[in-house]
Image 1 (cartoon, rainbow, N blue to C red):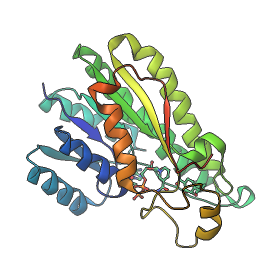
Image 2 (cartoon, rainbow, N blue to C red):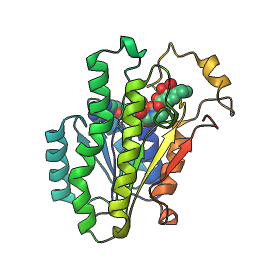
Image 3 (cartoon, rainbow, N blue to C red):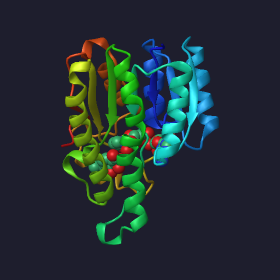
Image 4 (cartoon, helix red, strand yellow):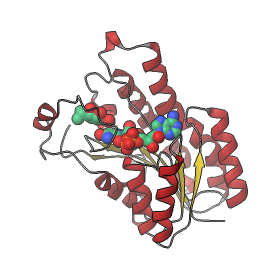
Length: 242
Ligand SMILES: NC(=O)c1ccc[n+]([C@@H]2O[C@H](COP(=O)([O-])OP(=O)(O)OC[C@H]3O[C@@H](n4cnc5c(N)ncnc54)[C@H](O)[C@@H]3O)[C@@H](O)[C@H]2O)c1
Ligand SMILES: CC(C)C1=CC=C(C(=O)O)[C@@H](O)[C@H]1O
């Protein structure tokens, strides 16, 4: 059995920073991407240069059958995971009256169904390890307080927070912690060029965007042995935006 950590959506942005931070902390990684295999392979090389092992899985987290098939095959070959970071996610922003059925469905299927699609196949194998384990879900300030233009996204992230808290209860006595990290405005490709940055910065006490590495630091802490009595929590990384 390995002590590896699966990080979904780790070819770029926050997921990439999390994977690199966990590798620096001494973990082996299971990287994941949907379409950008070249970027995921570049992250794999960076991790190998740090002296850790990394392999890459490719699937769409909204595709339930593909998630089960790829994850079961990977665990069959390499053993159950010590940790999972559910990071893959997307936005399809717009004022509520202008949202399309597709905007709603794509966000809910990726961000909320992705929680079930990824975690359901891996949880029983984690329990069978009979060792401590860690699950961290990347949610958002939008899932805590709501955000204009993000009714779909806020619903998906609030849903993940509820699901994670319930799963934390089920896994508590198995020594598997389940927590969320809720970033605020983080400087990644996800942010739209049309974002009213000056207006948004006025709402953030720290008066700046956060970095992927600042989110990764919080995830690394929750993955550590030091965080073994922390479960069912949401750790905000948002410069005071609330
Ligand atoms: N950037 C922010 O301001 C911010 C704030 C709060 C929360 N978040 C959350 O952080 C996470 C990472 O976002 P990011 O800013 O790094 O964005 P990003 O767009 O750079 O990265 C998102 C990753 O998720 C992957 N992904 C998206 N849909 C997928 C699917 N259906 N199947 C497989 N992979 C898929 C993408 O390929 C990409 O690798 C997301 O869950 C996002 O909601 C971001
Ligand atoms: C409220 C605003 C700064 C904001 C919060 C969360 C986001 C996210 O992607 O989770 C951003 O889209 C951004 O709009």
